[in-house]
Image (cartoon, rainbow, N blue to C red; front, side, top):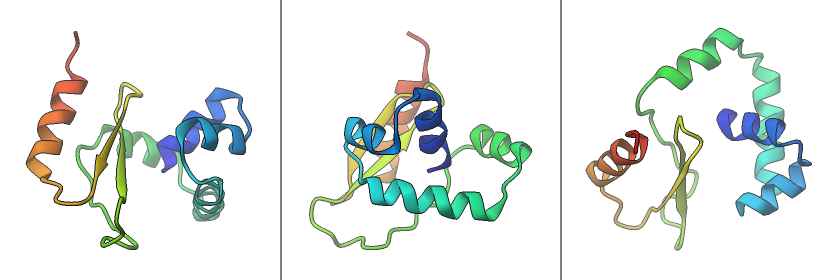
Length: 102
């Protein structure tokens, strides 16, 4: 979410406008912005996170029908994956393919 919020800041849009454009909940974005500001994460930690590979995905409600995971790639592309019957290997292949230069 930190990367999503950084994109929001760079976009120059309000939180509500960005959320609408990205088809996200403005309340979710606001909550994460508050949480991340409170944690005081350093720029070095943010850079290390961006350089890392896959990270653990923790779901609040994994059984929600129609739930979608959003993966923001280094390129800025967004991969949205339905969580029903998701296969981690398929996601890895998709991410690798999308991150390769054209």
